[in-house]
Structure formats: structure tokens, C-alpha cells
Length: 379
Image 1 (cartoon, rainbow, N blue to C red):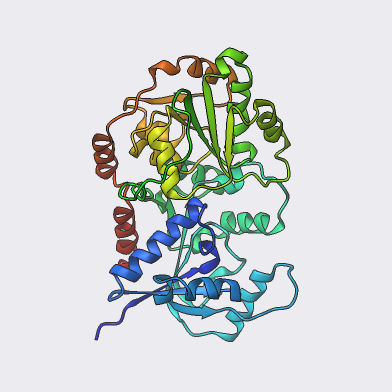
Image 2: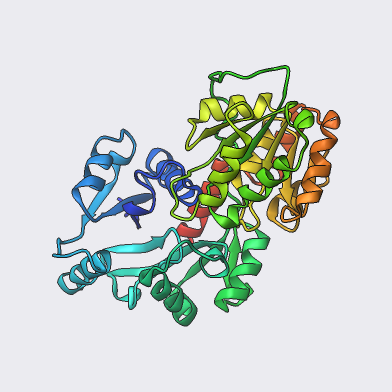
């Protein structure tokens, strides 16, 4: 009987993280292999604690995986790395064929793990290129290791050509060593819609983004605050994105200024309700100024929404030649104000042509997963 290829992932990279784009990529690959490729590839999930273990055991698909349990250690300081090294000290023989890091958070001497090969999906260069809410020592270490020891990786993946450029620029990694595999964009296509209360007499605008500076939600809200009272009454804003960040006061002030009459805020929406917003909004704005891919823009695009995105990002490069895609400098308040004042031109678009375009450019989850499977089997 032919042996299966053994591929390991850290469970912490995706379990319990439904709102994370990087986690979604990892989960989709793992679920696809567990349900479609189990005769050729065995998935091992590296588990750090009982919380992760219970989530996996109670998941119909993830429970099909094999488990690698990291040993316990005392204290919280650099806990996961100490677990990692303790495991390495106890296990010298090769146990898996590939250890796949879902993001470039590489432990020092990561190559000492009992694996034949090491893969990493960097997505883009945001871990280095973007300002962060607080100093995190582990992130600094991870970035240093990635820049210093990327040659120890046998495969490096980006999610777009823009992401590839960032990885090359900020990590100093040769572009010849980086392979581009787009994420999927089709997870909303076949699901049922669940309605959200919406005033159809108004121009309903959806803004997608966490309350972090680089997600740039504050600039769009500032543009709305520049409208006169009569114009503002024509709009209702649906703000979707995690809000509990320590320096979110600049956004909270704008939300309070605009008032509940003009804005509805959600930290998180299930896909069924998110799809409803995409299908019924007059415009979906994804204002982030840095994205390796920027999945929300592609989700909304596939549901026929008029969308507005920041110039130079993947959505600009890949979608801007199609109708009802507005590309502008999302740091320029006046450009956003000008767009809002011309809201009469926003029109929804039929989904068939848009979805076919995404399929033709390998932006479905099955296409993505097949590319990763091919990379594994070529190991």
C-alpha cells in the first residue's frame, strides 16, 4: 500500500478564528485535503492546549485529522515557542514530510522540527510594512527569523502579485522563490441569505474593516462627516469589522458623531447576513490601504455589488477593468466625498459574468486547494 504524504499545520493558525482571512485560507486547504485527498495526504494538526483540542474534536471535518500534541510548559512568556522546542528535544526522528506555517511567524531554529520540508504562506508583507497597535516581542523575533533564514523554507507562497512584491521588498526574499496562489472567493455563492433590517429609501453603504489604522475605516467615516446634514440623511452606513482595539477612539468619535440614525455597527456578521448586505447595498467600500489580497472586496464583487477600493492593491490590479469598480486614493477624504455625492450612478451588476471572471483567474477555493495539493505532491 502506497504511503500517504504527511503534512502538519499549527491548529492555532485557524481554529477559533473564523473572522481571519489568513485563517480561512489555512482551514480551506486542510478541510479540502481531509475530505478529498486523504488517500494521498494525511493532515497532522499541531495542538498547543485543551481549547484547541476540544475545538478540533467537536469539528466534523477537523476531527478526521491526526494530532501532534505539544508538551505543556509553565508560565505564559514565549509559551508556544517553549512548547515547540520541548517537543523537538523529545522527537528526533522525522515524523512529517511537510510542516506548513500559515503565516511567516517562524520560530528560531524552526528547521529543527522533525519534518523533511518546510513551507510558509506569507500572504503579503504586512507583518513588517504596517504599523501595529502595540509592540509584540514575538512578532519582532518572527520577522527577524523570516528575513534571516527564509532560505531554510522549501516553498514560499504569496496570495497575489502585490503580496509577492511586498514579500520581496520587506523580507528581502528573492521573487524567484515566491509562488503566487490566489485565495478562493466563492464561499458565499451558494449559501442562503438571511435578511438584516434595512431602510430601502436610503442609499445603504457597507464599510468593511477592523477598527485598526491601516484598515482605514476612519477616513471613510470622516468623509461622511464632511457631508451637510441634508446629504447625510440620504445615507445609512453598515460598518462591519472588529472594534475592540485599544486605540480605536478616533473611529468611536466618528461613529458617535454620525449617530445611530446614520450608522449600524457590527463586530462580526455570519456569511448569510454578510451576503445580504453585499447584495442589497448601493456600494461596498473596502478602504484598507494594505492587503495581500483583500478578500472582502472580492466577496462583494462576486455578489454583484458596486465596490470602492484603494488604488494599487490587488482588487485594483485584478478587478478595476470591470464596471462598477471604483478605485481611488482611500487616504484622500475629498475623493471619497466626491464619490458619495455621485451615489446615483451606483448600480448592481449581474453575478454570472463576474463569477466567471474569478473562475478564469483561479480564484475559487477548489482551485486554490488543488494548487497547494500539487505543491505538496511535488515535494
